[in-house]
Length: 418
Image 1 (cartoon, rainbow, N blue to C red):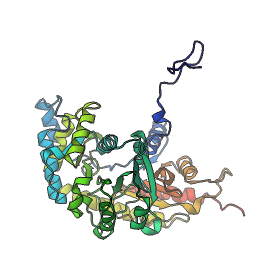
Image 2: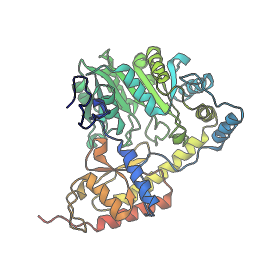
Image 3: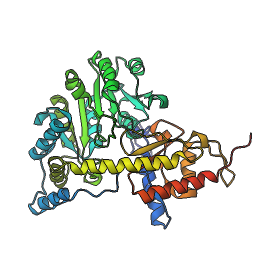
Image 4: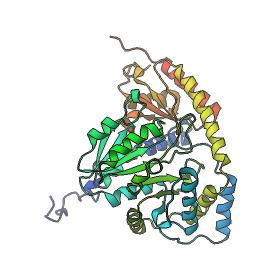
């Protein structure tokens, strides 16, 4: 029993210190499965890990050298909460160069990865009951971050037949007086879908008619857009909406800097100011050394970005061809990012060698890990059951081995008797 203050009576089990806010929030599926894969490798298992969204490329040498120089120069102390002036200038330069967007220093913030930037934006803008439209399939963290911040995620399906893209009619139907944000992620994780200008403009026109709604544009995969697809970002496509758009990006994907933890955003000055206050009361500034490295990445030669995009495109084409020939799997070419979102519905209901039925995509992912030593993520984690996400940002021999293992594992499945 507990008294009115919530403390435990003598002899009772102590009350949990975990608050109610966490009751409906799940651990990130990507983090959990990646840790499982690492544990199996530590135990001596031969596992191909295509769970985490990071490429095998090293951080470019000039970026590493800039970090070393910063260390030697003693740049190891606190910085301004929202980023050093040099980093904000580099971010502003990136937005002008790549996106045709002009942001002042007070309209820019840098944080500990784009993930923290998104979380801070939601925390600063959501009141209890506010709704956030999240198109599916979605990055695993969006809905739970909304819940943590007191909001309500409204999942709107991006259908496979529509290229996993949100359609204007579906958006219009989902908007209510409680809607606070529309989250757009293009190129998308996990689908690789890219909203071209003709597809994005109708969505923006609908949002423009709802003054209280903002657009959170997660552009982290911007530089892995594969021609003929064209990347565009909302604030640049419709400048009249710029004061209602938070444009989020970072150095993790384009420059192979996932572990450096530097993300950034440009947006309305009042929102950026609120996010800076929140950051000042939580993490304070992002890593000073990471910031120095990010300046070198953003200001330095950009040829490496295009070269690596071309390598990723070849890997995409190779793995898609190999997987599409496996009975039970269907694989469309993604327009961006570095994932294949494989339709595995044809394998649901099959019989495993041990006689168990493959009940769903979670069960199928577990089977592939146990049978083939392949760690991947079930589509239900992204709000799209019956699919599997595979990161193809791995060397070609690894992808060839991966496909061979999946082919053998699929071949060991039997059709369920009628």
